[in-house]
Image 1: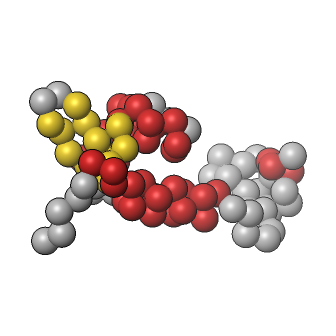
Image 2 (image 1 turned 90 degrees about the vertical axis):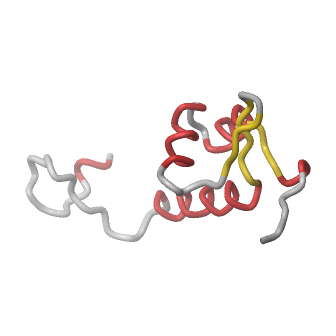
Length: 85
């Protein structure tokens, strides 16, 4: 196993800023295995490579994919794009 250096770790609060979320949400990502992180003396640090990978995954999921799809609670009932204006 490769040892991660301090330079390859990001403080929890900085990781939250980079993801545009809260520290609690970042910890949930760690607990669910979506981010690699560790706690040392009460201070959480996230692996930079893991953070970058999650950021890319989240950005790809938010990218427009062509035709708009209606949301499950859409009152239009078709892919009209009306919900997305």
